[in-house]
Each structure stands twice: as C-alpha cells, then as structure tokens.
Picture 1 (spheres, rainbow, N blue to C red):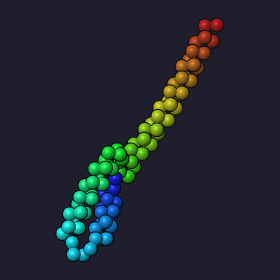
Picture 2 (picture 1 turned 90 degrees about the vertical axis):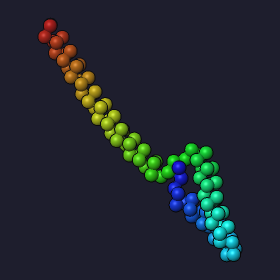
Picture 3 (picture 1 turned 30 degrees about the vertical axis):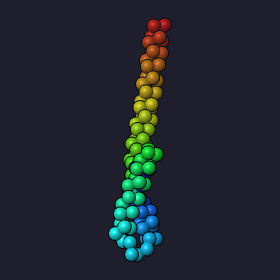
Picture 4 (picture 1 turned 120 degrees about the vertical axis):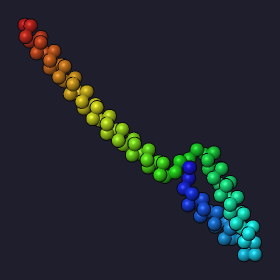
Length: 92
C-alpha cells in the first residue's frame, strides 16, 4: 500500500490543471484518479512506509533474540564439553 497523502497530492495536481469552470467534473476526476492509482499500485504489491518500518523493527528484534540464543547455545556447548572433559579426567 502506498501513502494515501501522496495519492491525494497526485490527484490534486491533476485537478488543479483543469479549467476552473469544470470544478464538479474536476472533483469526479480527482476521485476516479485516486481509485485508478490505488488499484494499479495495489497490483504492484507495494507496502506503505509505515508497514515497512514496522516489519523492520520486528526483524531487528528477531535478530537480537537470535544473537542472544546463539550466545546461550555456545555457552551451553562449552559447559557440555567442559563437563565431558572432567568426567574423562576423573575416569583416568
């Protein structure tokens, strides 16, 4: 989804360039222009800046959790290796 303000701005630019005597027609053109732009942009499967930013924050939090989990796994692996080494030494 694209920013609706940008769509409104484009539609307004189109209607502003129409003759002043056709204001009612201009409003209809503006509405139709918005509909057509929105429809065509939806086909492009775009996302809004807000949606993109939200997903970016989610991804960053997920990455932070992954780094934490990797550190914990590494720590546990070291404890397992250390525990196995001490058992071998005790058996000797």
